[in-house]
Length: 315
Image 1: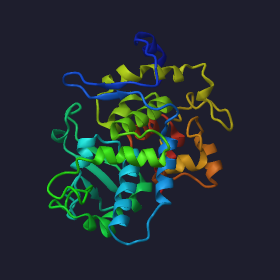
Image 2 (image 1 turned 180 degrees about the vertical axis):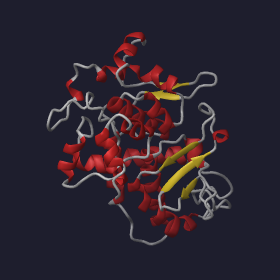
Image 3 (image 1 turned 120 degrees about the vertical axis):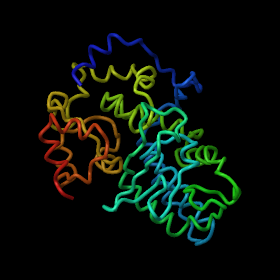
Image 4 (image 1 turned 135 degrees about the vertical axis):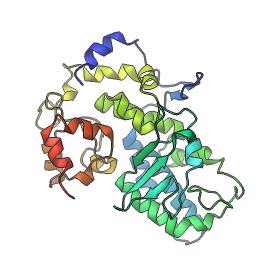
C-alpha cells in the first residue's frame, strides 16, 4: 500500500459532481458516475433490513415475490454483478449452475469468463456469497422459486410475466425496490456496482480488490475513482483506529469483514478499526468465518501476523 502516494501524483485529477451518465468505450466496461448524494453501502444494508420486515404472510405468490426481491437486493450488495449476469444466473441442485453450494456448506457464484460482456484478463468469476445472504438463498430456492414458474426453472431470478425468457424487467424492479426501501429516486444494478466500488476503494485504496469483486479492469476503476486515493495520504487521520488511535496503515491492518458484521459494530460504516478494537466492540474473538473471501485478506495476512492468526482461527 506504500506506493499509493507516489501513484497519486501521476494520476489525472478527477472531480466528483454527484451526477453523471453511462459511458461506453470500445472493449471497456460501462461505468455510471455518479449517484444520488449520500448513497453508500450502509444505506443498502438498511434497505435490506427494511424490506425483510415487510414480509407478507400470505404464503402465495406475493410472498414468493418478496423472497425473490429480498435475495436480489442482498445479493447485489454481496456480489455486485452486471444486470445481464443477474438475469442469466442459474442454480442446479447438482452444483453445475452459477450459484452453487460447496461441500463445506458455503454458497459461491461461479461464472465462466466467456459469459461476461468484457472478460477481465481472461479470468473466471469465483466468489463466495456473503454469509448473511445464505439464509435468503436457501429459503428462496426451497420455498419460493417454484411458485414463480417459467420454462427455465434453472434461472435463479424469474417473474411470472416472463415465462419464456429471462427476466428483462430485473433492472426496473431493482429501481422500484430501492426507491421504496432506500427512500431515493431508485438505483439500478450498475449504480450499486458504483456504490460498492467506491466503498472498497475509499476504505482500502485497493483497485485490484474492487476489480475482482466487480469482475472488471483495475485500469478502468483507476480511471474513474483515482480521486479517492486522497483518502490514503499518510497525514490523513482516517488511517488511525477510531477507538485506540493506532496507525492501521503502519500495522498493515487492511481487511474486509462481512458487511452485516461490520455494520453491526460501526453503523456509519466508514472509518477504520484495528482488529483488537473490532473484537472489543463485538465482545468476542474474530474467526475465519467473519472475513470476506476476497484477495485483500489473504494478501495482507502475509505481512500482518494479527490478521493471519484470525484468518486461521476456526469458527
